[in-house]
Length: 145
Image: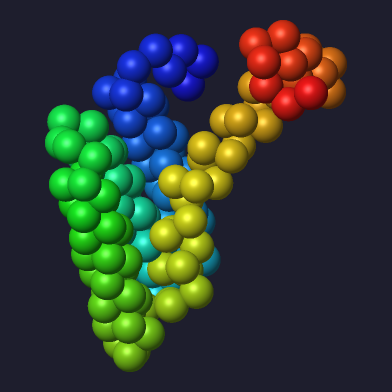
């Protein structure tokens, strides 16, 4: 996860990290004989990875369109992703034997991995000193004054 030099590299890195975390969560649930949580983590993780892939795809397609077409496409893509998530979560909620809260936790794994990566980078780069350095560069380029 150190070299996110391109979108495909970043996608692959995030997906692998999410699968590792999800694998640990699922195996822990199975080891604790809580199959409902294992199914919930699996469903939430699959949905999260699907949404992440669709987001990357829709952004790439939007960049190839005119501004007006891109706005409509991005909005419709957003609505479709979240309606799909809502429908699947509703199905999980009303299905006995699948832990709804585990599905929610799995749904947030992509976000947690990306935030974890950002925090790790801040710590590696010197934390607050790094933020000050970045803020100084922004001011030099004509940003906030």
